[in-house]
Image (tube, rainbow, N blue to C red; front, side, top):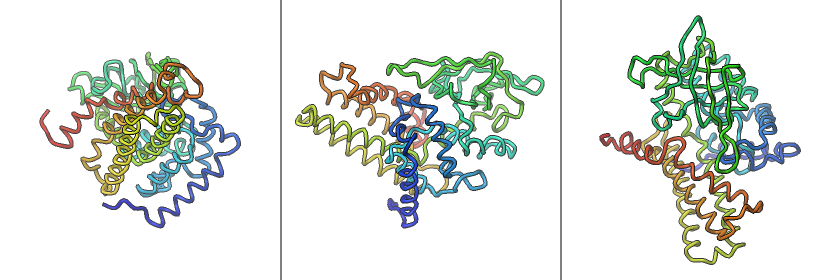
Length: 386
């Protein structure tokens, strides 16, 4: 298990750190620290411009192979990129769904024609994507999707509903799981379709959250259309494609996420000192516990990535979502406790901590609930019976 970075890796760290310092200025300086989880709908036009700035510098899709427009970075260099991006407080990426999910899916499952059509605009930051997976009755049970698609005269006709769709209003396209065969077991009748969002058959309804923000939306399809060849993987073979997409979600960016977590913990420590909560032994114990758990999280991520070997992630990787979601929820609760009675007041000085607390209530639900994660660990990592 090698948890160190090479001299070449550290030289790369200097390169990306320098570029970010030189470019997160002027019109982009106001974007620092914005657009992350719980803040994804903030300053979207500026973040779209930032996406194109990254593309002009060659800093989008850095892990993709050069033939697909990327830099072909090693896994550890992708980790460094994610870490330095977070350390610089660069804004949340509006192109992350295309770059991190749809793009790798097309690279792995798509045709040559699909790669030529869909990958270059993602690299250039000129086309944005949203993900149409969850439905009102198909969240953790993703195979239960009911949105229907029927092939008629060279076009898929799509009718149904998706929910919790991030940045739907700003996206050019959606990759949606649709039921294309109702006469087979539910895992076997699903297809992954690429659907243009700017059409009369699509209605987008923002969802107002407990935070008062609307980062997600419901998307209604009423005879929406997409071309017959806009299906990734085989028709009715979308379940395997969907599982591949979800696997891409658990990548090198986890180390960058943990740096953001560390910044949130540091912020809470500062506030605890201001409010006097840091003098309370129980609060000090909780801070120490969260700091320790965060470092365990980082070491486990490095261990998992260092033993990846280019194949399937080891079974240790299965704890990742359950671990960080529970940690982040506990951090949000600590944030309110260090504020004390003032946690019930909408004080602009502590808006970030209120947003942190409210957002982290959802961490243990989205992308697979804690209960579902425990089932995955039991069945796939430990080989236990259902």
